[in-house]
Image (cartoon, rainbow, N blue to C red; front, side, top):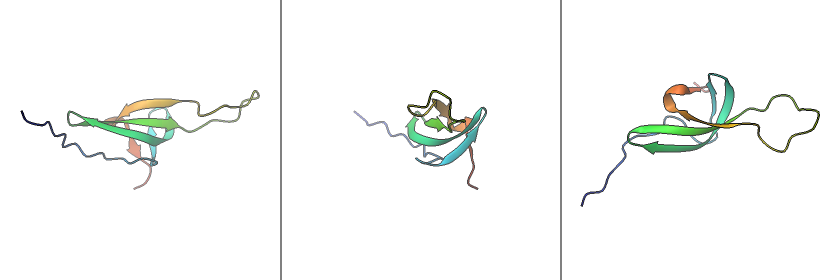
Length: 72
């Protein structure tokens, strides 16, 4: 029985600031599977709402092709 080795290397790293259609955010986690990497991205918070804020507003799952690095 042979082991499956995933050769995909992530292009982005945890904590990196990135841009995507819809906003800016930072990488929380990366997962590489079948040669493709996907990332959990925590979006930047907007202005403070009147009722306050409990935590981050949105965390989204994006593929590497949907992300642009802000650090060149």
